[in-house]
Image 1: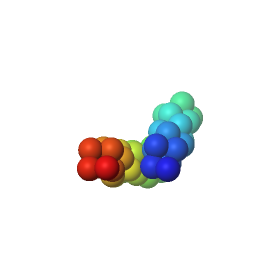
Image 2 (image 1 turned 90 degrees about the vertical axis):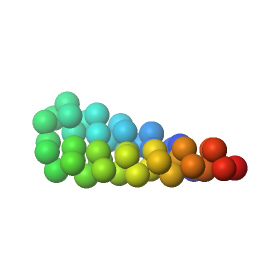
Image 3 (image 1 turned 120 degrees about the vertical axis):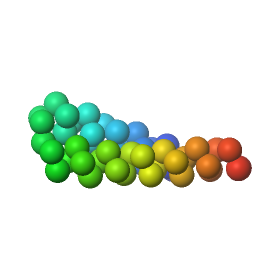
Length: 46
């Protein structure tokens, strides 16, 4: 489930970078970092 969330947020981040939209880039950058950390911990401590 977190893999799908992380992938979706990463795609939104790419969209924000393409459109040079700072609020989308900022929000999704933070979310990708936290979702990736959670994903790594879920995989590691399964």
